[in-house]
Image (tube, rainbow, N blue to C red; front, side):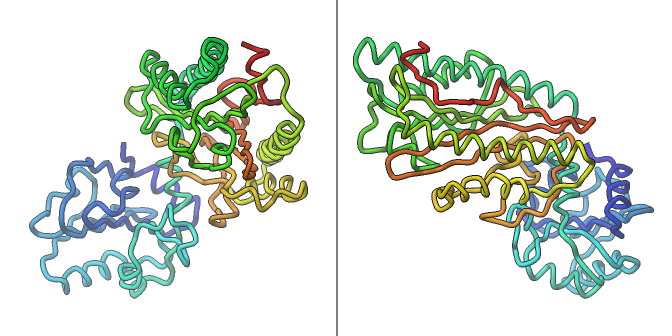
Amino acid sequence: MFELSNIQTALEQFSLDGWLFYDFRGNNVLTRRILDIPQEAMGSRRFFYFVPQSGQPVKLVHRIESEALDHLPGEKIVYLKWQELEAGIASILRAAKRIAMEYSPRNSNPYISRVDAGTVELVRESVESIVSSGDLVQLFEAVWDAEQWELHQKAGIETDKAFEIAWSFIAAQIREQGSIEETAVSDVIMQHFKQSGLTTYHPPIVARETHSGDPHYETGTGSDTAIREGDFVLVDLWAKLDVPRAVYSDMTRVGFVGQHVPESYSRIFQIVAEARDAGISLVEQAFQSGTSIQGWEVDQACRDVIEQAGYGSYFVHRTGHSIGQETHGNGANMDNLETHEERLVLPRTCFSIEPGIYLPEFGVRSEVNVFVDEHKKVHVTAGKRQTEILPILREY
């Protein structure tokens, strides 16, 4: 729910004169969500909503959609002609010098860049500087309340169980019929989600052998999709409770269909696990010492381990992503590869740490979820972090 006082407190925290919200035909989903605009209320004309650090906000809306922001506090300015729109922008920003928008310099962070370059050019005529609203957005889009933290933990119990179900199913099918299709394992996981009251936007990744070397492998599309004894298997799954405001649990674990895991697999896994733990440790140290930490630093801590082991070129994605009501949320990502993520890791946010090494023969990823609570305690959620490749036929 939109709370003016919370936004103005955040503006004071970040030393900003105001936050200028803008949308045209639904292209700024961040603005629409923070301003509590229903998804179905698309609209077809531009609107602006300026929240100053103190005082009342101002709405700038088109005449034929003059009620678009009536649910929000503040004075309303109605425009019809483009000249009136431009004059309105200058008017509402007349006392502002440094403002935030959903903008990222040089598009360095496309997750936050929702305002087009032309609009930024227009607004710059009225202010001294525009800065990214990335950390502001986090406060209203990525921070969890107590209920969401509880929902995440409940989802984590069921996603943790999903791995047990998957490994057990693989073992039983191998013993009964000698092989099992990747898609059949995915189906069993989806059935568990449904029975447990969970929902997800996409089925899990179940990838055998070479397929696991593709980070975004589509289960069942490889040249040979039958899991057999002696195979390495990666399972990446994500789900949330099927209730309003629920947040995701998203994890990846790996197993070997046999009694003993070959050293060629174990050696790579240990490097990945060490990288994962280096990222977790950096977050823990930062919050214990009261030091601010940005997403790129977590990525680099993990990446350094893999690079030093000689596998840097095989770690081909960022270390982690924000987790929220979407699997990939709107908070800071752990990324110094695809972007230089300068957003802060904030209390009451959750993110994945999931380094990987993807070789032509197989790929290893170990994914955990990390939540920093309001007391700045760092939690690795949903069961124990994996410490070795699971020997499926020995354990099940």
